[in-house]
Image (cartoon, rainbow, N blue to C red; front, side, top):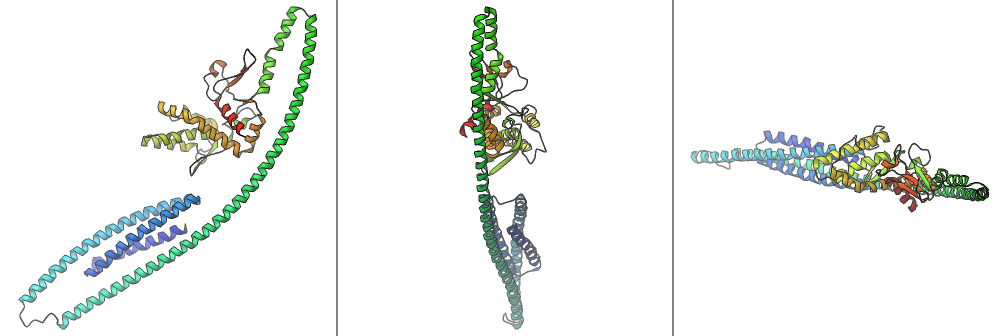
Length: 449
């Protein structure tokens, strides 16, 4: 901000001096005044180009360091508009001064011709060219020109000194900023190191707890197996005594839905936002989700906000039509955390689906290719930055993860892409109906932990 203030002060001075030059050239008839004014205006144009280069370098360096704020961005934009207006004004002023100089030059040339013709017509009594009157006039004019040039040179020297001082100030400020940035980086590195240590300790504790829980579960399973073995022995003994109809009923009960339900409980972990267990794996679960694209970071209030916001933003990136590109990009902004206005995940789903901006067939095909990668980015961000998500994912163990669909029959479940439903088939095998791509992506992320 200090750099912009110095540049702004210089621009204001040049604007005032340009008005002064225009005022002096209006009343002046001396060609040397016009030459000095033209030279000074050209110097100011060169100085504006130099200021422009310095500003570009400063902005690029700050953007690389990510130290520039929104307030500074606004100030830079206002200064750029002011600078461009001044450059246009300087060019226009230079054009007017040059035109005036041409007019004065023509007038002086015509006057010299007239004076020469008059001197030729005059009698010998007229005073010669080297008379005292003519010489005094020339001396006065030359003195005026010398004084004006001295003033202009003094002003130029003052301006150069001010520029040098401003450059020194800028260099000092840069050094101070670099020192402050170095200190901030050291602080951030220390804080990150502490946070990593804390996370490692928490993870170690969580692992110990999980190992204990797994050991308890194994003990329970072994006890249940022993109980089942005893029950099977009892059933076998009773079956030997019982008639054939009772044996069939016992076999049906043993292979009935109770066994299937137990198998699904042991081998499958379902997650949905309305269910308490593993709800953090749902895109509807509210949390900060950041998507990094080069130097830009886009923040959303949930996985559902991020999914639909990135859909329109990335389709805008691939669009070749400029009007469609701006339409998609503007529509994507409402899903950002800073613009959503407390929008719920359900509203985000509606605005990102059939109730929102309609997509063409080529856009839908492109999104089908990109959507899985976007969901992988969302899930990876959540598991790497939110301890609760990481804990829930680890608690699923090696079970099949299924993103449940609410109020959907098995017949319609086959058409689902992100959801699924686990069943036990005739051969006693677990089969997942539907695409279940959200569950598959979470299993991919879990395998990498």
